[in-house]
Image (cartoon, rainbow, N blue to C red):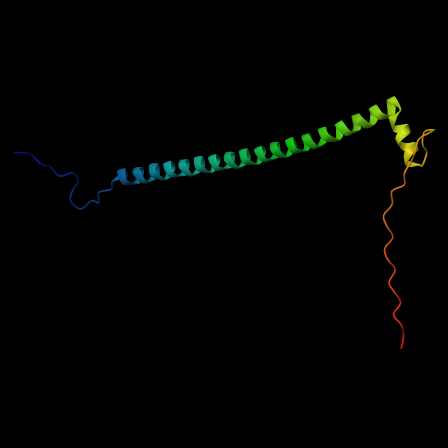
Amino acid sequence: MRQSRNLTVAGSVRTNSFGVRKTVVGLAAAAALVWAGIAFAQEAYIGHKLSQQVSDLRKQNTEIAAQNAGYRKDVQGLTNGTADEEEARLNGYAKPNEKTYLVTTPPSPSPNASPHP
């Protein structure tokens, strides 16, 4: 037969600290999980923004590279003299014994005057 004895003295209130400890540990664990979740979300957001900036910078780099190629072509034309010839042709000059043609748009037809009664 099992012997039983009273855990508390008659007339005293039994206080159990195990319930309070369990609640405090649970709240601390929940706070740690919330903090970790917020930190993870923040890192994911920053990573997304940085990858967006990287793609924007790559796009700008390709545009700048295209502009640089055009500038190199212009500089090459200025150094070997072809730009001077092109500018002279735009101003109406031609080489000797060269036939030139003038290409223009046809004039728009003038409206016919309607007879007044």
